[in-house]
Image 1 (cartoon, rainbow, N blue to C red):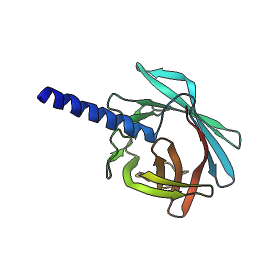
Image 2: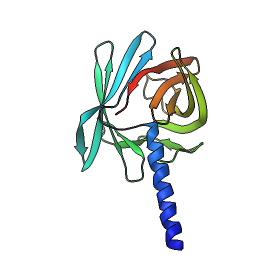
Image 3: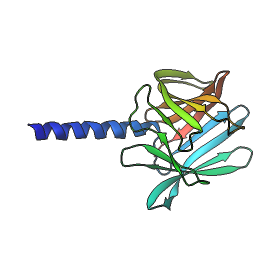
Image 4: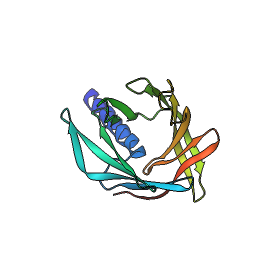
Length: 182
């Protein structure tokens, strides 16, 4: 009987870990388009991967309407956390924790940012639609290092879609206008 309970507990844990990754679905070909003031940007998970220290990363390309683009590197670790690889320092930071639990906090590897699962079951209203049952991650800059970024902002995520928008104390900063998940 204990053996079956252990198997059931492991199975439920794996379901929870897999479920939490739905807030940031890493699958080749997934694409999201966002509106930000008078501009747009599109994030797409590319088909090719990047390997560093025997770890394979998804490449996410962000194209901005003003003509620039950047590449970011993500992977899912053995615990189910989504990990971001900083391309300059080659250090990793948790981008999305495996366990989605209110109050869960973590900091970037260099201790410049603190993140918290701030709210669950929130609603985000955008000009085009309303997203319900959002998980909200609060990001707080701890050192002021990133002068071109706000000191605090809130990212909204929907299970099965991923990131759907960002707000600051003044209101909506960017929001999802279109997405295509594979």
